[in-house]
Image 1 (cartoon, one colour):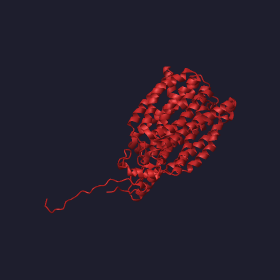
Image 2: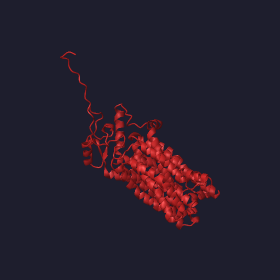
Image 3: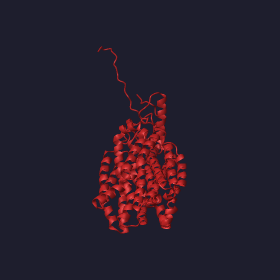
Image 4: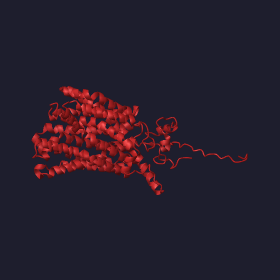
Length: 503
């Protein structure tokens, strides 16, 4: 090379630096509205599940009065199962709408459908009035309930996790399941009060309608609060990016939600992980909520009222502990708490069923309490761990598919599977072994899953509670092990970030 030839230098690419304007600072008043508005929907959903589950015998007698008792019960349980069959379709439809039109609008729609269909059930005439049209109308309303419920939990968890700060996401999201199990306990309590205060004839005549009619005014109140919520900051930023990219003729695959089949192709691994976790958690959860009343009545000799009443204090205590476990996951991580849930199921399932089979009320309550331990550890983390498996543009849709298919296959069928195992083997401990098996597979899924506590959601910028935390995060970004600056979507969800990285 000639001595005087100019030296060519490569351009030095500078790493994009996180700025204070990139960090989302949570609006605390709107956060409270978001949590409150979503909790009421979850409470209503589980209130209806509890009411119908505990009124199964009565509903069969009202809507199929000319059949024998066994056929009435089979019909009523079949209607209950139909609700779960409709959930996956609702998850797909509302998940797609939620990723395209917005979380807030979609969640308001699901709540309207759920409250309306529950209220209408309370108005339906029975078999003695309109014959076969009565069970047909009941099935249609339950299918509509299941369809709307398919978009409820997936949307609620997506909405709250996108609103919450990174360090409090576990606690705030777990409040959703506090509402869920309090709703179930409330439904069980209302049915128990009616059964204790009204005669069997009165319950068949009109008493069964009261819990369903209560959903009307409760639904109106819940819809009012939900309509007051604004769109989540993370999703609103993604919508803004979609509009800007569309205007420039440069669509970005990170901000545009793919079609359902394309989304499954992109996220099939996290979808499977989510389904396994939901299956493990809901198998234990539905054992406690849906199977135990029947188990206590059919196998343990309790009457229907006491079979219901024994589960209520356990459900209330468990519901109050759920936020504590959510807060624990913010401290030590989602994976350790979920592993504790799987491990406690494996260790406590057999002792729990042995205590329940022992006979006295104290041992039954203790056995139910042991089952509540893994349920608390599991469900307190699902609402924060599952949405963190997916990016913002596809989160609602992917959650709708993974959660609802898993619940339909494993949650709604849990009582049927466990009773079938007992009938097949004659062993009353078979339900415990089934719970242990599902949690072994669940533990494998937790091991595969990435830790998400105290980290930004995929496709989102960091979220904090105060401006001081935002400044501290920016100042410590180079040594913060929970912050991968290179993976942040600069220009997609940062409020003040440029569209292209610095060079």
